[in-house]
Figure 1 (cartoon, rainbow, N blue to C red):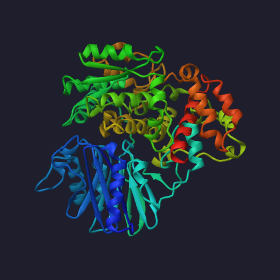
Figure 2 (figure 1 turned 180 degrees about the vertical axis):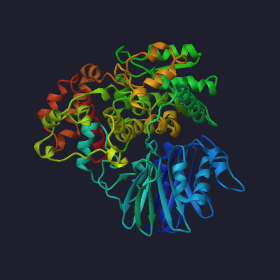
Figure 3 (figure 1 turned 90 degrees about the vertical axis):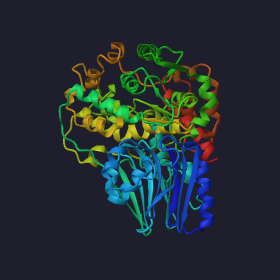
Figure 4 (figure 1 turned 90 degrees about the horizontal axis):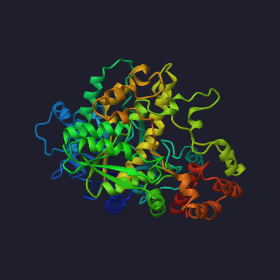
Length: 565
């Protein structure tokens, strides 16, 4: 796992490029505290800051072969399969970085779709004077890029772009409005006018000062019934692949069925490992009962971590700054809390992320309102709230739209539940869930792996008939519940879906009331001409009814103060 950055087509001298790329890597140091490396050539600079998980002795980056260079962030799980496919007389390392490099040399861009894992990487093909930027199929690893002068710059995080002096940092107001609505900025945007994110499943090809974007992965959609035992075997196989590490490994456990299955199968690979769970004093939000039940059943060391309002106030600005762009899923607070504690013991954790989106786990899929747009109904700041918080001039600006999954995949008529699942996979999963997980863990140098996003599982899930996903009682993940029988305690299998929520309403009404009001009503937001002061006051008086909207605004205040002022 690493942070990567670089540039192509830049006119600076090689000496200047070296100094800039060193600063890029320094800005990304938290993503890879174990090692740094650089490659500088005429008009090209590549940098890597490495978190050493596999292939420790010889896996240094940038890596080269036949005048082709690579910097790689991520983890490839099917390396042995690819090694058997790639014709290579001598492998110099046992790292997945070399597998990608040799695979590209032999197969070109066709190798990208063969990679199973989470990744973002850059390949500089010197003989062809061509740069490739590539992002994994579901967006587990981030990759930002921007055009400057006659060149292109890129980095794992926005901070990695800061050293490039010709890059303009102008805020995009449509992006900000989108953030206020959904708590994140939709891909391919970033909050900044001139900076974009590479979309999942795409690569960017730069050649002779021009570039093109191309989708290298589109899922094959063909409905097919699956047996429960087949899914069990798949989950077990994927967890096993994700358990390969030269460093200590652990797991995040919420107490829900997804992470419970991951922990159960991980123990079949590793007899003992630490399990980390969040505990809230508010029993409405605490899942301690369920996470403790599973760990006792398996005899695993269970580390319960308290997350309270004091932790939020103490670490709020640090957590906000992890993202570089405006981001305000309130569960970013307990996720950061988990990551911070887990890093004390391990360098890798497995999670249950992705199962809800692919196996229809959210209760909102069953929402039925013919006059309402699915994405609008569940926004963190609805239209009515936006209208009394924003001044009239801001209300006329159109928020940046989210990606349309169905149009991109050119699907025909699909079941409404499936359409909502597709929408979440392309938007909520990549821009919220996976963004939250990556930044929180990588900020402390912790690698997080999500077995449910392995290609074997996602292919099956995308093609399951609705009747294998949804019970008659309109409850999702039906086949997952069947797969968990005999493995996971019944209380976990049969419990009602509980999101990774935070008692913000109680916190903003209690100990954090003055903290919230001071930031909301006396902070940077009041100096901008975007917001109605009376609207902000009205919002602050009803923290239970507007807790998510308030949280969005608090994040925006912190982000704006750090990045603009």
